[in-house]
Amino acid sequence: MVADRIRFLREQMQMTQTDLSKRLGITRSSVNAWELGISIPSTQYIVELAEIFGISTDFLLGVEDTATISVAGLTQRDIQMLCSIIAYMKEQHSCD
Image 1 (cartoon, one colour):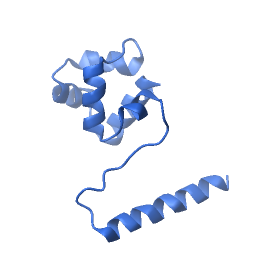
Image 2 (spheres, helix red, strand yellow):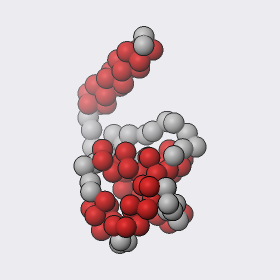
Image 3 (cartoon, one colour):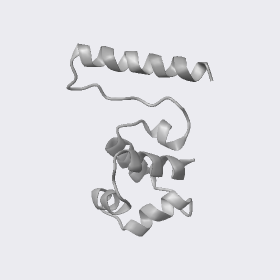
C-alpha cells in the first residue's frame, strides 16, 4: 500500500526517483526499495514525504482514502471551480 502510494504520488508530481531522493537527502536505491515494497520509510521520511506531496501521513500510510488538497493561494472562485470538478467526478463514478 505505502509502496504504491509513494510511486503514484511521485509520478503525479512528475518526479523521478532521483529527484525525490535528492529532496530527501537519501539514495535513489532507497526510494526504489520503498516503491518495490522491499523496505518501508522511517517515520521521519513518512512525514517528509507527506510534506513534499502535500498529503496527510494517514493517506500515505493507507489509513484513510481521503486526500487533502491545499487551496492556499487560490481565489474563492478557483476553490469553487475545484469543488465543482470534484462533485462532477464523484457523480460520474457513482453512475459506473
